[in-house]
Length: 502
View: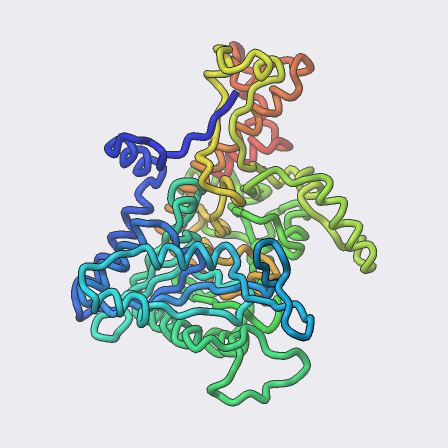
């Protein structure tokens, strides 16, 4: 009763372009414009790519090569050795041993296919593209970065970074962030990191071996902590810092949790792959203001509201967590003697401090599903996905805003999923901006757009699941003033929300 609507399958080119532009919401256009700023041989582009398959983006880099731009792209290359087969039989050598061959993972093979399908009118440009442009990154767990450094005459000018892979899924199928930093010092740090990645050093040092490496043979976790050591305490006001992974310890993840725990008025947090334990422990504590902050309100309104209001935390997940998965993780923690320490969504969702939404489409009731697509209510309310995303369907952003509406907000954003793996194992980058109210407003506006979109769907679907047990369906018109009562009840989430946005 539902169908997948893939904009790339629309036969009319004009309508296809219109649909893609609507889904991209300016992200694709901004990305292509950033690449096109490298207009001639005075410019260089230094790129990292986890997934590299979007035709327009791939061709934009190829066009830059044709303009004489010096383009270098580090990309993820991983695979495994598997038994070689011929006509469904396993191949063995003369001694009877199984012959193995290296098989790339899907990300690697799809990227290589996209690279190979680009055509050039000039053999020189084709040679540069195939033999001088791409650098393989083998030795990290995952080369998960997706950033572009723009240089002029060898000097870094600015950086494009964020959560956006160079794929149709990232641009048309998920929520993502593209963040441009116009700061030469930050761009220089990215370039220093890129230059080290290009040598394909090991991701991590051997544990318990000490730091006996030569300067030119350091693993990336040691290099990254040299570029930017782990922070201690809040960042200074009006600063931007960048942190690269992998790192030797998960201390940076604990630092993110500390920043969340320092919140005085609000937290807005997106989690594409669940909530890691350090952050879950913070969310599992009832949020109370523990310090005074400068809230951006009129003095008269601030005086009327007071400063003793409890904070509110908004958590946006890609999907509703699974109880089975939660039970399995909890059982694993108990086996390791950490059962009392474990907590997750099913613990912190109960707290009034936490307001939670997760990705979903509008669903019909069982009766509507049985009636099929001819049902008027089903055709009006049911939704479907593009089919472009196979793993993350809704929320792929990785950002957190702490005290967004104060005069000293914290914005943390980038490629890492606020997880142990993204901190200790993967190649990642994260920006931390302190006190930039303009940037905080942009991120907050986007967060609220997404949160309200999905929260309304979650509630609609919950009311559908309850069926006749629900006294009133979600979105039904309320003809009296009962809807106002939660906003004046200090124990209700909506009261906290009213105060936060007053």
